[in-house]
Amino acid sequence: MGHRLLSFAGRAFALSLWLASIDPIAAAGPAPSAAPLVTLTPAQAIQCSPGLPTCEGHDAVVFVHGIYGDDDTFVNGTTNFDWPVQFPREISGRPVDVFRLNHMNAMLAWSAGSNPSFLGVAKQIHAVMTPLRERRYRSIGFIAHSLGGNLVSTYIHYVKTAKGHPQRAQHAYAITLATPALGSQMADTGSLLKSMLGMSDPLLDSLKTQNLYLEMLLAFREAEGPKGEELGCRAVNLHAAYEKKHMGPFLIVAERSAADAVAASVASPVVGFDLDHSQMAKPAGRDDQVYQWVAKVIEREFARLASWDAAVASRDPSYRLCRKAPLPD
Image 1 (cartoon, rainbow, N blue to C red):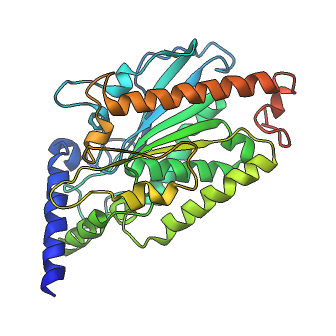
Image 2 (cartoon, helix red, strand yellow):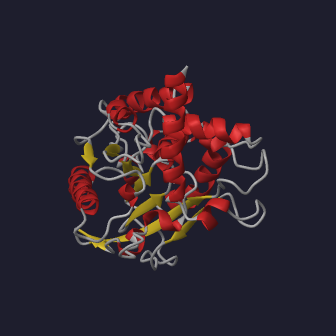
C-alpha cells in the first residue's frame, strides 16, 4: 500500500511539473462559447491563391498541438522561435502552405462536464480539414505533439472510413512528437485528481493507459497500410520521436507508448531525444536537433512524392493517388 501511495505521489509531482510548463492563461481557456472547438488557420501567408482552381502545385503542412496546448506549444520560450511561422515556405522547389490546427480545451477553469469529448474534437477536425482536402494540395503532412498525434491518426482513419482510400492518400505523412499511442500514466493520475475535484475531462481520459480505443486505433493503422497497397495507393507514412528526459521522477509519455507501440508501423526508425515532453515541440532554432530531424524526414518525403508523381504522370488524374480507386472530382 505504501509503495502505491509513493508511486501515485511521484506521478502527481511529475504531473504538476508538466502542468507548470503550460501557459496558465491558455490552460484556463476561454469560456466554451468564446471560440470554435476546432480551428484551422494559416501560420504564414497562403501561397496557393484562392483564385487558383486547385493547389496541386503546392504542399500543405499542418501543426497539431496536444492536450491543453495552443499556438505557444510550438514556440520556444527562451529564443522565441515560432516553429510554424519559421517553417520553410519552399521545400525542394515547391511552395509550402503552413497551418495550425487548434483544438480548444481547458485544464482547470471550466466547470464539470464542459471540456470537449474526444469524439467531438475528432469530428470537428474532419470538418475543418475537408476544405483543405478539397483544394487538392499535392500532399498534406502533419507535425503533431502528444495527443495531437492520436487526433491525427483518428482523423486519417475517419477519412478512410467516411470517404475512402484515395482521400486517405491525400495525406502523405504524419510526424508524431512524444505521442502516447498507448496512453500515459500521467493521464491516469490527472484523471483521478480531476475526478476527485468533481471535474470531467474526456480528452484527458482518452489518454489513460489500458485504453481499448487506442489499442484498436493502432490495429486500424496497421491494417489500412496493406489495404492501401492492394489498391495501389500512395502511402501515408508515419515517423515518430519520443522524449527521454523526465519531469520529476517520471516520463510524461513512456518510450513503450510513444515508440515501441508504433515500431511496426513507422516508415523510418523511431528516434529518442534527451528532452522533456514539452521541449519536444519547442526547437530553439533551425539548428535544433528536433528541427533538423523533422526537416530531414520531410525532405525525404518530398523526394518520395516527386518519384511517385513521375511514376503516375501518365495516369488519368483521378487515379494518380490510387491505381485501383478513383479520387472523385
